[in-house]
Image: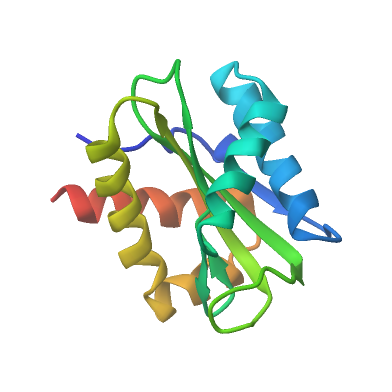
Length: 154
């Protein structure tokens, strides 16, 4: 069984432009709040607080911001592809255009870490990220994401 939810193309968001990392976090929080019936400002504060511990931008234009939601039963992810990269204070100082936001139950640190590790491994694969960047529709990104989940489950 999958450690995190990526149930439909609605969990893939193409973004024309955001002008800052804080605007990106606000957008992520809004989408996550709709999915999880949670408070968007509280989720945004979580993302910002986590980011203060160290950048979730791990290089090559990819970031995995993450937070916790008390009411969740299992983790879920939302993939954002930015048409115009945004400065993210990444470890390699490159701007970010591929963002996988992960949200997990407040009380389940182990599931959160397992999901984060799986996503991180996959998004460090340059070929996979190139396919994500080349995908022209939310359905195409969704197919890539679900094929990665199926491969990990096997």
